[in-house]
Image 1: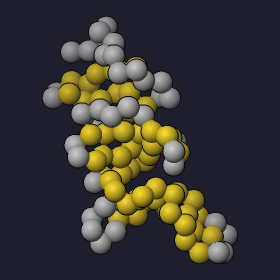
Image 2 (image 1 turned 30 degrees about the vertical axis):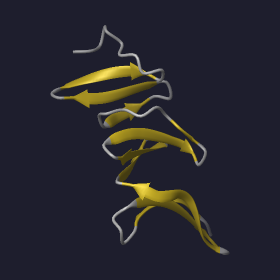
Image 3 (image 1 turned 180 degrees about the vertical axis):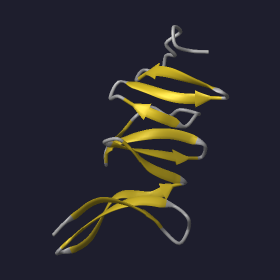
Length: 99
């Protein structure tokens, strides 16, 4: 039996991801994040008040200064103050949708 992509918080209050199988435990993502949660098929992380989506162990999205509430694979939904804004993956606010 195998358990993939388990989000874990260590004793230093940092988050990372591990996998567990019959050979033991392997680390998928380093324990360097202040916050980590699932966002659909993705993992959203926060580090030094910057938010990102992790795609795999070698790839992540651009950094945003606001929490990411949704990610479609191309667009980010972030909360800025009391409104939600939509950004493309190249970090341009889509003016039609922004505040």
